[in-house]
Image 1 (cartoon, helix red, strand yellow):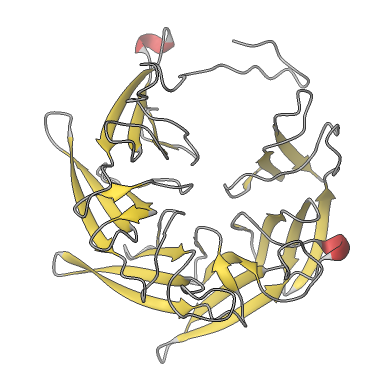
Image 2 (image 1 turned 60 degrees about the vertical axis):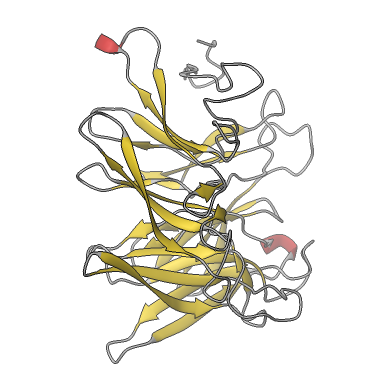
Length: 341
């Protein structure tokens, strides 16, 4: 346990990976966020390590009576095979009410272009692995942001590549997809293929509002003035009662407003979303297509609050917004912050 640094908060390290030495059979590089079950156990992924160096799905079990060490259990080893996955990427897992675990891998599957997978608990404490969908390229590839569920049990996600080829993204500019349960299988529908003009490289998980509208971000597209050439934006896909999808995009323009978002969005009420941009070091709010900058981090290396936003979405609670940076802070290695009006 480390001493508190400001605000009276205390950090406790629950588990350190690569405890077995150089082989890292317990996992290596946990890039994604965590989820928690009803008894307080934590679940996550590592991008590397495991028995075949393809990454893992792990569980950290709470210590008895709340005292002692947490126990790590590797629930699945990714093996880079056609019937398995390779590299879970930065997307959080998702768990249903009966304990099935869902996620994505960047590679693996029938064409080594990534999969959506399910882990199903067995009675003996182990898990069975199923590929729900293998990406082929035309329907996207490289899904690394996990999946989101709507109230009807459909899954949604993005792939950073695949779909339509275009100048600047010959291998495809990325897609938004839906997986729906049909007679015991999962049927994929590509809801939108980015074309390089509207935007490219969707760089986030999908957020879903109560009306079934889908939100996310794309890293490139729109105005200039950012280090990647164009500044990216936020997309909204609106299902139409007559079928099909209506598409809306907000573009960042660089300058003070910044751009190139590397996180998804947190939903607020009344068509309001919150997020961060990599260029400009801003936390922003969008309402009805109007952008408000809520906070700008310092951009110098010795800044206490320097940006470098993480891949996870912001989290809101009781009027405050919470997030993290991978640089800055007292020791220069990142901070967890809250913003309060």
